[in-house]
Amino acid sequence: MSDTPTRDDDQLLPDGGSNEQPSADAPARRYTEEQKYQVFNKEFMPHIDSMYNFAFRLTTDEDDANDLVQDTYLKAFRFISSFEQGTNAKAWLFRILKNSFINDYRKKSKEPAKVDYQDVETTYNSEDAETEHTVDLRAESVSDLIGDEVATALNSLPVDFRTVIILCDIEGFTYEEMAKILDIPIGTVRSRLHRARNLLKEKLRDYASSMGYNEENEE
Image 1 (cartoon, one colour):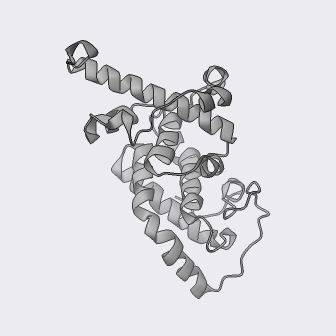
Image 2: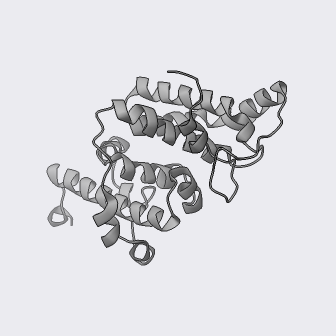
């Protein structure tokens, strides 16, 4: 994969955690070469396991996940001057990885086209998501299920729904951080997560039913 910077790369890079939208005009930090390696090792490398897990959940392939992580870290170092030391490095890296997946890997994968959210988010709008109870993957959804079953159900979701569950319920990002990573409004984060959790519940319920577990069998 070419390491030549592109206009899309510049526009998609995070801004290091400011409240403004990222852009190619974000102020560059004047790091020396030594400081760049210090920032890379101290701020970025501790998140490599989480990065791989996220990449694997997106690609569902070990080789593709490794390539995606490597590509992400190459971009992170190349554009390290746009990262402000001491801000949220994990969210910064996750955004680069997410954009790399969309721009490069998703085009070559067998992943179906992006979900059209228009109907979904008309029904499950942000107001509904704020008032209706949805299930947290870390708690109720998985209380009686082993990891492989949850992983299979999660991987079967469309990638955009899968992503919000990973970011929120596995990685623990806030809605604000997720909005920055995904480049969407917080209201859309809420509604997408609401719908994704419900889809996951349906898939887990279907699995339980196929295995002979249902409410009638419960005593």
